[in-house]
Amino acid sequence: MLACLAAAALLGSATPVTDPVIVHEWGVVVYSAGTTRATGSPAADPLGAICADAPVLYFHGAPFTGDVAVCSLGEIFSTYPEPDQAGGLLLGQGGLGSAARWEDLSVRPLDDGEPAADRAGMADITIPGFGWATGLWRAPQALWILRESDRFRDRFLYYEVDLTDVGFPVPLPAYAPADAPDEDLFRGEVLVFRHLDDGTVDCTLESVTDLDEMDRTRIAVLDDKSCETAAATVRRWADGLLGEDEIQAMWATWEPFVLHGDWGGGTLVVFPMPGSLVERISTIVVTPDSGAPVECSRFFLGMKAI
Image (cartoon, rainbow, N blue to C red; front, side, top):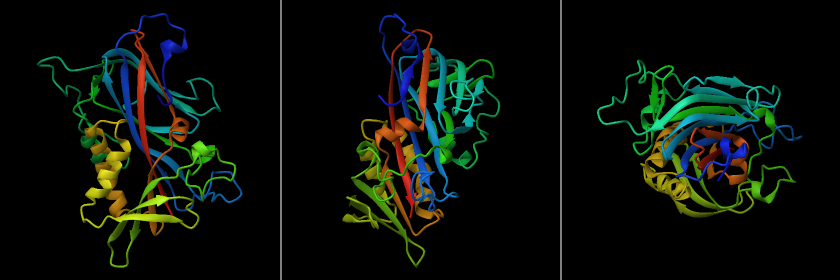
């Protein structure tokens, strides 16, 4: 379980154990080409931004009514839907980050004959940069999330976090601080995309050891035009943490950026974020009225332009 808490457990509830509420989350941490090390280190580029883009939350398992909050030492913004409360960490302690809380939610399957969209404007979601992708995010296996106060109903919650000013490190060894804990470093397979002179993108699957000037061993050249091999690699990385439809939604959202985006550098390295760093992006606090336990699976990709 990664940074996902049941508030009832925090309060010492003696409620008998029931079927768990299951939370799935995917997102991407994007490091700009100027971000060489953790913010605040001598080698840091003050213009290098670090942002957790498009964290998307789904619910499975036991239906529940209650509240959901996300807390972070970074700045949470672009929430969907509009939270009932937003502010300092844990909603009231200014200067310690930020949080957003959605209250009085009913998370459940829809009843037979119950309309899936009785809220005006559901299809017209304003999420800067991702409005086109929200249709992809409605994973059909996820429970519906309903809020009576504004007749909201959808299959996901959404937020972003600006981590630029909190010293969030790049986990690739050549870019991490010298004293970075081993659990914060990533040594394994990476997808490496390069802009070629003819306007196309070369993609390779490589094994990273040190990443000093990209010291790595090439495993395979992924030269299929559809980049299906890259998609299969991401699917393998996320297997057991997300559902198949959620993995597909994540990759379909980011594939256009990977293949056609302006990375700010000639090479883009894509890798699974270490679990220890995922926990530092944010904490999810679920408060079921029933006191049900909460289980959480989180998967984030890192994307570093160099």
